[in-house]
Length: 476
Ligand SMILES: Cc1ncc(COP(=O)(O)O)c(C=O)c1O
Image: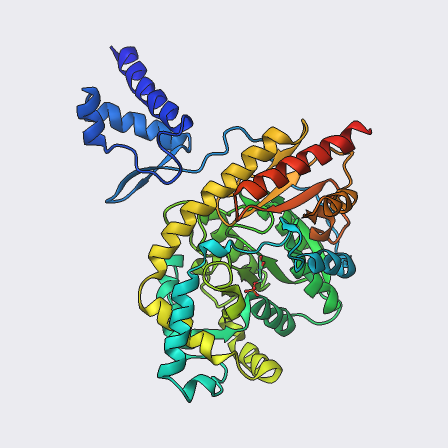
């Protein structure tokens, strides 16, 4: 009897899996409710519940309270890279030139852009935000062209403070400062905390602009082994702290660039508590936090901060309007210094775009917009990952991001991604070579791809890249 019941719910789970694999239910679709499926298949509610629990355990579906069961993005046919193994020593950074060279090509409209982590313009609320900006310009004629002195627009700070609850922490509008994008927030944090020659712990690999900032400020980077799904190793970080003098930790705990990893809550808590114990500030980049492939965003590490030791940096560049240059910093115990530095270095952030984003958030369209883009980014990222696994040579590995829109691809060892970068440019495609994501010249056989868009042109570009990589591997 026991055995028979087990077989039945497993069979139901298999039927649903089959429907998902065949495309009857796609990423983000709601599958039949428990009651409905029980009636349709003439089976008990308990059996359906057990089948759905099994599918949840397998990561195929997720339960959204008061809403039902939905298909999650699935990377079933891909193999992901292993946890990184950088050297456990601080290193001077020297990637600026290489990074600027790659960056320059991101402005070339003739190229198919797979390198920069630019959001998909079709997934930005283009008309709504521009209409809001025009309305603001008419409504606040004088205020609109006046200084909005640091800490920035109160209306916008109120909206950002309200939204912090979704990330698991509470804020008052006075706890945050508006910046020109997330990158300015990061720079302010680094400049307030670190002095020349200091060491900053970073995930390995990491976003190349972090490395460029570290290089420009005369700091050293200490790369921490990072798992492509669960983020930086806390044990390795503890070891690094015990054997080096580390001034700050600069991490992207939710949907890391380039890995797409997301630290589970317990790990975020452990990270924040450990750093607080050693009195090392955590600079948290949360720019991708809202682009979760699940129905809700994860908690920020800031949610576990009891002593103001976490400086959270973020912006609306990935979700609303990168060109508006509106970001913010929650500086915790460094508020006075960050505010002073922001005021001295740029006096204020541009006014009209702050007011437009404040209005956009106040009109409550943001959550609806997020629901739409989460589904689309999940779909596009899964599609590109599957195409890479299918079209690139054997031995290629690709990450399984839980959010954001970039993929980190490990190519066979014989592929030099810098050479591949040149070959791809000749074929009209730009990619980000792995070396710019490390202070230690690592990741020579890795590339980062922007998966924000998935259309015929991009499909073709991935197929071309696959052929080029195969060509390189055949020469060895
Ligand atoms: C991890 C990360 N942080 C910061 C930035 C820069 O953000 P912003 O354009 O808001 O300055 C980016 C942009 O790609 C990013 O990927």
